[in-house]
Image (cartoon, rainbow, N blue to C red; front, side, top):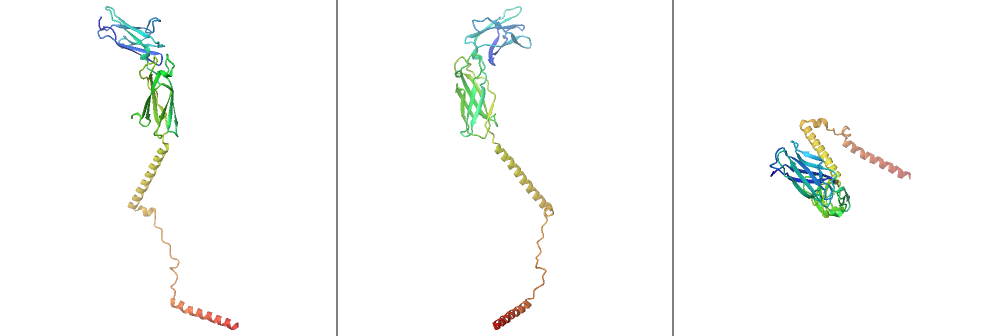
Amino acid sequence: MNGSAIENFSCVIYNISLMNCTWQAGKDAPGDTQYFLYWQNSIYEDAMECELYIKDENGRNMGCRFQNVRIETEKAYFLVNGSRKDSLIQFYDAYIQLYKIEKLMPPANITVNCDEIKNNCIIQWQRPQISHSNKDKCFKYEIDIKYKASPEEKTIYTSIQEGGYNHTFQRYNTRKKCLLKMRAAGSVCFVSPAWGEWSAPVEFGNEEIISSSVWILLVVAVGTFLVAIVTILFCKRTGRWKAAFPQVPEPKNAFCGLPDTNTELMESKIPSITSDKEEITLVAEILK
């Protein structure tokens, strides 16, 4: 029956050895059509039927999950046929190179070590784990760095590196923490050329804690100053300032209570004192 074969068949390999295949029913396939998937990893192996089907709400097989999948250099063969009681259903088949449909895991054991003097950071990692290659040269890596305080903003640094397992990043702002993430893709060898999963963000750098403390102290100081000003103005307007801070009386003059001095009497005594001195001097000269 024309139009009864499945459509939009696709497979993806993930987590090294797991594979999912999905499809849609043919546009002209009767409602009671059931589909079955068979696959052969290489010409040297026997064909196997799917062991774990993915079903829709009507119980129709619409996909399959595979475990312990090995990626070979040869193309794998997939066959999906259908059946129903009263008519023949067209089959669908395809040859697929498995390494091309693999969704690569992110690089492993990502670390960042920064030199506070040179202001550069060395990023190190290990290649993604795959089942069919252990060569570092088979991969390329994308590095993406953003500020932690604003991860939704644009990337501050990005780089694509062919092979290797380390990268040096020049840090221009040492007062902010950063978030780094990486992903991998095949460069050469039999490795998927599509970009794989992003790694979990890796945090590095030092936040400017001193700056935060200074801001807190400034806010407290300004707040205290404003409260003091408002309190003083309030007290002055309500007359409570004098009650809270009464005026200290001036000290009394210790000489204010003495009787007035008679100037004429003082002057009259001065000559007498002088004459007495003259007489004493004269007597002393006579005795000589």
